[in-house]
Amino acid sequence: MGRTMDKNKITIISQIMNMMKINCQFKDKKIAAKLNITCSELNCLKQYFDADVLSVKDLAERLNITSGGVTRIVASLEKAGILRRDMDPNDRRGINVTLTKKGEKTSKKLYDITINYFNTMFEKVSQKKIDEILKGITTLNDIWVDNIENNDKLDVQLSGSDNC
Image (tube, rainbow, N blue to C red; front, side, top):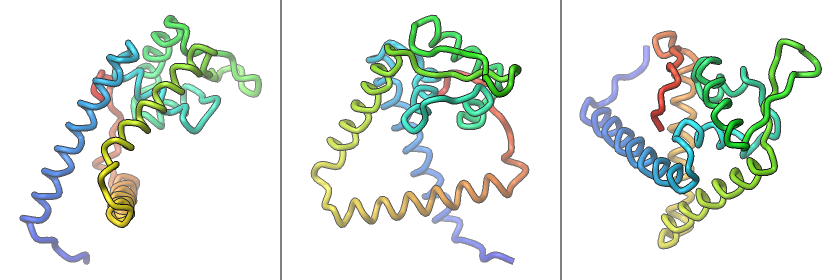
């Protein structure tokens, strides 16, 4: 059986994580407004930082929303000329989603804004402190992912609301 953690420490961690979520939402809302897209569209575009082609199923898994929610977001970004849907050549039932030329420019701008935001945020922080932060948040994320993957109670898909 695992050890029990101090309730006060759990409360503090929970509060800090909640504040970080709120701060991230605030940042994302500002960036989305600057790009004239919704927060859901912003989160979708972030998935293309490390991928050129994603299926609707891939996007649903990455965003933890239903395929229907992804379809609405993709349709909106397609209407704006940012994404393009094509039939998967290997599976006629599958849909691949890629960035258009406008989408590549928008994604690059989003990436640049994001990197600049964090560069500015950490410009007065020592490299040693940045290394400590990176180690801490990596550990936290690993614990979180492991908990989600091994906890059926948390295995819930969101409805595709416009929360950032």
